[in-house]
Length: 110
Image (cartoon, rainbow, N blue to C red; front, side):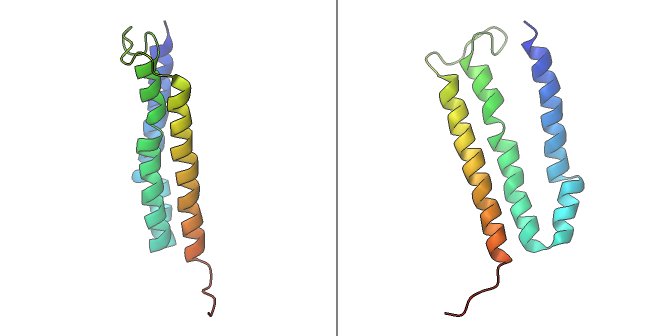
């Protein structure tokens, strides 16, 4: 019954993190670190904005009472939604960091 309260609290925290990454201190630090870091930060910011949204959307859509007492999708497994979200966020996030690390690596002579 009180899940909306925790949804509100976590939503406020989520949007604060999004603000920091897109417009706040994190964005400024990335900008000052150079174009490669700024580009990676922008990509990671999209992962946080869109990728992290998978979890509350999946919860709202796939559980009884998720959205004002209405289950939007029947037969939707919350575990499947979370596993897809984890794959997108963890693998994708890691690949962006790996690509950034490769830009700082000295090129080898062939």
